[in-house]
Image 1: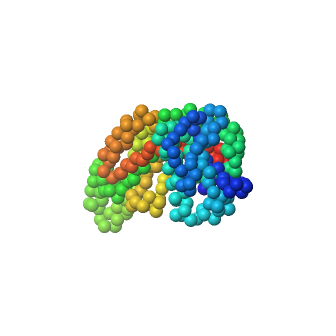
Image 2 (image 1 turned 180 degrees about the horizontal axis):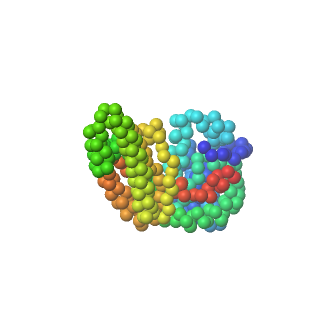
Image 3 (image 1 turned 60 degrees about the vertical axis):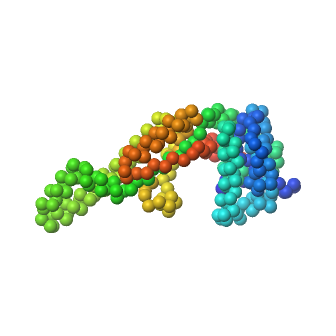
Length: 277
């Protein structure tokens, strides 16, 4: 959760910011986080903030701090936050803000827009007509190991030679061969993930390699070998997705997952500074 501004309790409401768009952008009527207040725009020259009022009973800094460990509450609010962003993003370019950006007045929102006006203008131009796609690749290490043992000529030759050795010598050589196979598996996984990333990057404007997730987080037995985000021009989306689909058949030991389209969360280099105002 991001840092929140101190919020006045004069009127019982704060102003929650979902994202930034160009001025004049509109959307069909929708309600904000609490499902009571409408989402609307606070403009400043050529840009505007997408906001809704939220009650301080639920969104004061003290309340947010106390709710941060309430998984059900937090998930519900984060999903509502994302729903608003996705609704706007369907038809328009938006700079998505992280969950938890609150201001005490509309004037405070406008001050934030003014302070970062140049950055917002540049980001909107950069992101115009583009969308983010996520790619995850999972590998079955044991299946790859078996493939190497059966198909790699050098490994097969060494294995055959070991079979002719005495028991003591064979054991030592077998241990060394296992180490060589393990190193070979590591190399194949590294080379394959780099190959996939580079290949998809050719069809994207920009890419980001993200932190790999553990099986505890993914809920999968297979090892994640690539976690990446790609900024793709909308007219190139079908080509990008087709190539991601083609990657699936490259190896029997990996699975390729592609998700999106998302607002470009991973391509906002200047946003961290904007979040702390």
